Image 1 (cartoon, rainbow, N blue to C red):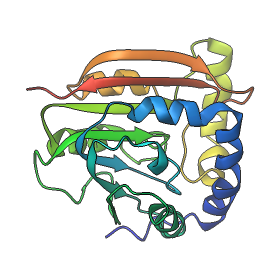
Image 2 (image 1 turned 60 degrees about the vertical axis):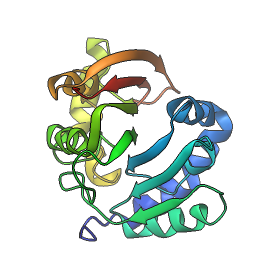
Image 3 (image 1 turned 45 degrees about the vertical axis):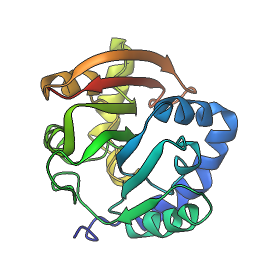
Length: 209
């Protein structure tokens, strides 16, 4: 479906970097992101599968969508190391490989920064969610201060997206989630590290019922 999404150098870099970030505290955010989930869940952009170990046993099945083939190969290895029922699939954010109203919850973690059209991705997530289903999100976002936003805009216009797997620094993801029709029920804002990607959000939104 989407193997045209290829970022092999970034995928290898991420496979090295992400475990270091987890040991520095990001693993706690991954746990918080999926805590309390149950039933059938879809995660868009699972990367190397670091989230798999944190899903609670009440999750009956995880539909794990990853379009980048190098990432997906690493995720397949991670899936074999957990008891969770993981169905790992290729798929694009704007055409999720799942029927309408087929999952109890959807999860996005550091992925809405890199999809070509976040609004379309969120529309697809609404489509596959059951009415009233939860969207769990953990994303780096637009800086709250003007100086930070200037740096993010400058990097987004030059080296950051092609170097970092299509990632964009200056997206106001919380506002985009609301504009897509979700109701944000919980929202935490915090910073991780000193980089231009430091501002983060973590929260829960619900699809219209």
